[in-house]
Length: 300
Image 1 (cartoon, rainbow, N blue to C red):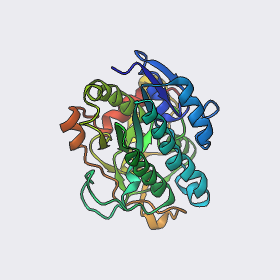
Image 2: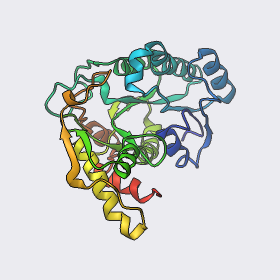
Image 3: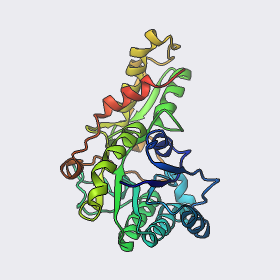
Image 4: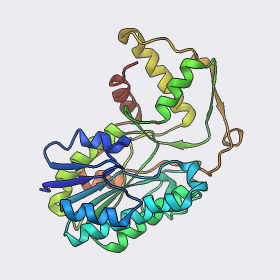
């Protein structure tokens, strides 16, 4: 069993959730201030000081639109940093878990994507994350690349919190209804990783590779927003939460064309998790269950 883990991005959604669930390990959970992923020198220095058995890297440049205007920084964090981390892990005969994204696909397929499907990212963020995947594979160390999607949670900035904030201030919401994926909670991801570690560590070589790693099921951003509001309303009375200003009838479905953004986004972000279940017997709960768990843990 791995004893010493270096965890990046501890102030991010997934990193924060993982920190609370890896207590049985000797955990070095580092923030951006403690580990500058834009500096290869800093990465090498920190990894060589800690000498971990396993590096888990949820840290990423995730501002999808901002990546279009800051591609160099996006590639530094999403491609060069994972490569350097992988190289340093290989020096130590350590293993590596890295998080990637549904945005490596172009979204033109009309059914959920499999790991072996052709990748074709349509924005800088997706291209930088794909470059990170390719760099890790090229290093050749035992690794898991976990592609997830639409991440949100109790901690950090995310779609869930944006919707609740807007719903408390506005009479109506306009939400894109023609992009589909699986909202995936950082809590579900963290709990899934704990289960993975128990299965993967005895068989690092044979189970190395890319896995889709999302809550099950799918919906649109409109469907996700609607369920957020419904779930809030279901819990509000018993929790003594303030009433939302918007009613569910005033959540309006719009198209991607109605809401132009700097970066293109895939219309279909659905990922097939069959390989994960087959190889590890790990299955994340439905996206509705994930949302319920997160909402129960929130306070207003």
